[in-house]
Length: 262
Image (cartoon, rainbow, N blue to C red; front, top):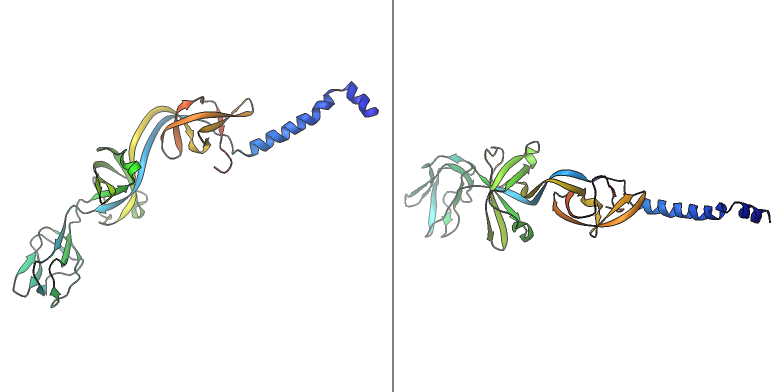
């Protein structure tokens, strides 16, 4: 009777359990989200990514047309030679000379061994002024155009970022290749070395951006008035971490949260 009398006199006591329950549910909901972040406005650059290989501009593979014997070696594997330098001599006295200056990168035979037609006897590689070849997936290749800027980084030059330009894109053996000219490519980068390449395919100035981690199935959760609200959103250009908002009720002052686990 005493409790009923108190409830009759103080009806807000009936609402208290509902308030506590609502608070618990709200806190549980908010725990499923990560800390709040804000949209930002500025430039966004979208890129496609691939692995680039330093490639020689000229390579000479010496092959013969008839069976012969390697009479004499004038060089060894790894040797640097000038144009016109003798490379190998055959049993009949013929001598093959370097068509250009380069490095002997393959020499699998020794003096006195028999050489057969169409077998690579020697490879000479021009190490000067190489370029970079990147292999891309089809979805990335369709977005690449000549003169787009590319940023390159290599394992042995981690403190240095290189800049290049796309000069061509072409299919080959079911793959898609992009040639990139890199002015002043360091001498430390030898032919055959690989690095990460980002080709800039789109750029937007002064656009509203949100973290991609806040987007879940085409929606973003916005905290307004202390209450989470799901807002549909469409993303345009993206740099891999931030995305351009092209559609959606997102404001600069909004507080966004990421779904748990993202």
